Image (cartoon, rainbow over all chains, first blue to last red; front, top):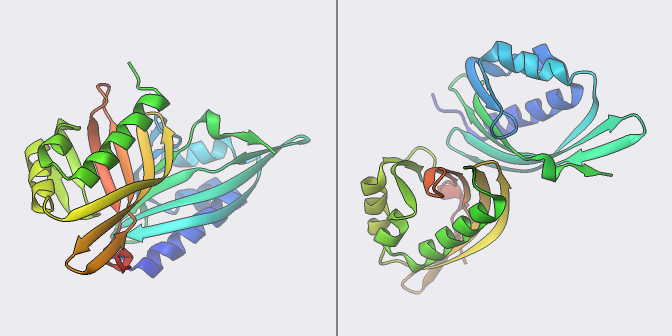
Length: 123
Length: 123
């Protein structure tokens, strides 16, 4: 059965919270087994294990993630969020636009995170 | 060779102008032969001929299209635009968020237009 707008909205909020918390296994559990993650554009991870490894690489970086805008249509969400990362005394701001498609179980089937190094700002 | 941000920006502006003008063949020429169009989410047209037919169905609707925001990363553009359509004395506003991927020739390889009937407003 198709997901409702409310279900997808909740799933996006859960994802943003999990990105901020940074636990790779909790993040991996939000994805379908055969999910495809492209983050950023051009950097593709195939399947949940590769996605957990991707989040594992950045798990020790202190992060704050906040949802800025969200559009839902059918099984697709497009949302912009701000992510502040801390590296020593420096803070960096990145505002990815993610395009996320969900399966009928509410798991993430695919995500494309649209950002490049040019979007990274020192704050 | 990879497209530059400027080339993709120009291609998006060309697309928005063509949507406003509404000529199906000119619109079709912006797409790769084997392009996939999903507009809106869930309504898939495979290949240039199907895409030209899609635009043919709405070619007599008077439209104004204006780009609102644009993010480019790699070969992907995400943009929001406003489209006002005229139907008799009524005007409708729709603001799709399009996710567009380009091939190395600058042609549209895929587009997903993220909007639903709930986004259509009488103005």
